[in-house]
Image 1 (cartoon, rainbow, N blue to C red):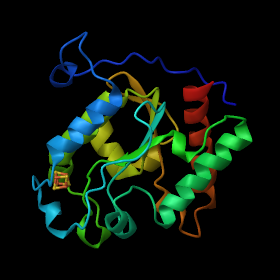
Image 2 (image 1 turned 90 degrees about the horizontal axis):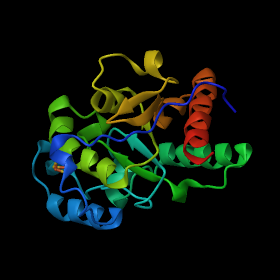
Image 3 (image 1 turned 90 degrees about the vertical axis):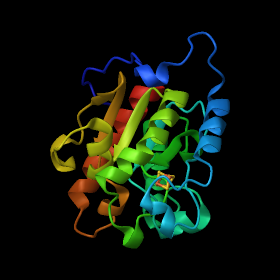
Image 4 (image 1 turned 180 degrees about the vertical axis):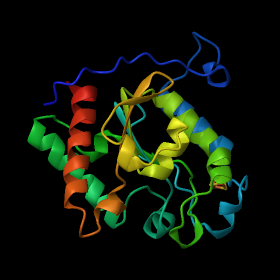
Length: 217
Ligand code: SF4
């Protein structure tokens, strides 16, 4: 386990997310409302090529939320995030790290979603304006769940969530924050699937250990 200092958890909702103090519904009710508000969304151009909106999956009271950039072909077909090859690697990473570190959770115990909910054509990265439009839903999801930690996967999602221009290689492995919630940036599993990425895999596993220990110790 890492002996690095742990970041503070001190959630600060933004003014537009703060709502009416004292009347906050249960997280699952809030998530349902967000999904209703999203409806058959056509707010950005990505709706044109999608089969299914990929809202997110996992328990509404999850202690960790993983955030990728957007759905791929398998996710678009099934309507669930991280179900293709990259998703299988993410599952392995979560399950094996948790088991190896003695943390009693598996993938089903965390919440997983993306910045944009519709598949960008040809698996390109979502554009800043698409993330700007769809990101309102991600931010409402994070506000509903209020996890102890967020793990952001890959440079595109990190740039949006952390409002940074720095690349993932530079920022991975060190805690940042989103509204007072600690955020660990790490590599996207699809990047780790490339054969030459042994060192990247080792680093991502280290990052994941920090996240799981922070959230569950
Ligand atoms: S990506 Fe988001 S904002 Fe764009 S159409 Fe899909 S749900 Fe709507």
